[in-house]
Amino acid sequence: MHYVYVLLSGNEDFYVGYTSDLKRRVEEHNSGLNKSTKGKRWKVIYYEAYAARADALERERKLKQRGQSKRFLKQRIRRSIEECS
Image (cartoon, rainbow, N blue to C red; front, side, top):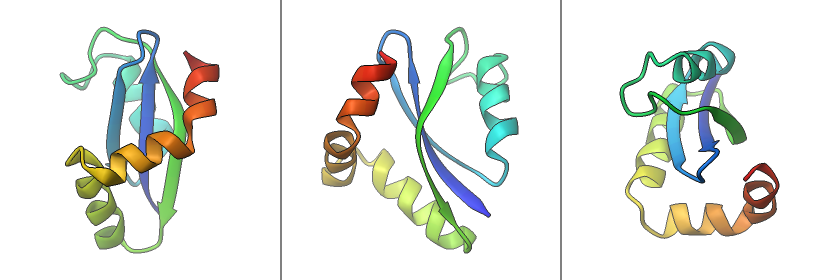
């Protein structure tokens, strides 16, 4: 499986990523192995699973473009964001 995931930090920073091993990847983020997320504690607040790698990468790209896709996702998971903040 291939995953597109959304992480939230304590100060409400939002991070979107892709991986084929979600548990390992979140551990890497929280241990400082990713320079974009280093120094913060992250929680998974949302993920999508795809059988095809290309589909997951396309979805990640659209979410990272900060367009309507990301705005609509934030609206859809707003309660999860509020609860984890």
